[in-house]
Image (cartoon, rainbow, N blue to C red; front, side):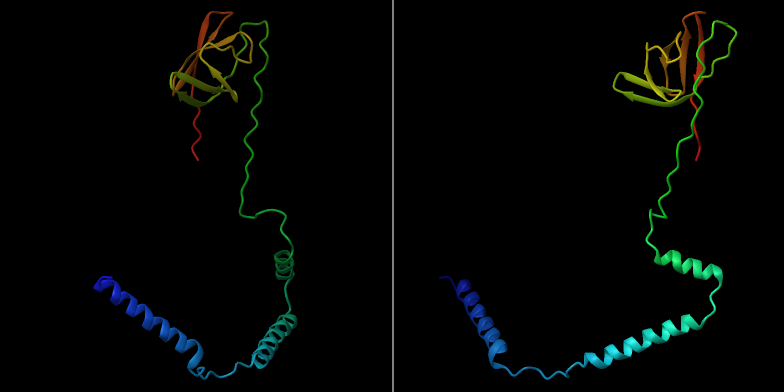
Length: 166
């Protein structure tokens, strides 16, 4: 055994002897016994005084309402705000008349590699797909606008993105 190992063993031995002495041979430290009964009675009397003080107060109708609501079980988290998205009216079906004005709303753009996806009137479309409104095809998708081709009139419609600022 090396000198270092011998020193470590001697220290461990003395620590073990001291631990045994403290655990079994030394006299217990003198602590004052805690009388939980008197402290508990004092606490209960304080609580009773507070309850009587609140009962003596004339609570307004609003204060009484607040207290009853605070005590009641909550059905939902009052700090969680859930807002429903706006319902946009569906685009009308294309009529036979070519003079009818059609509205498109371009609200989202997503590019995954070579695939570009546009959200038009709440639905997802890729380049070349026909829109829900028959007769219109997505011709080009850019982050700022979408080009839609009217197959019947051979015309194009440029729809800018709608960005909502919160």
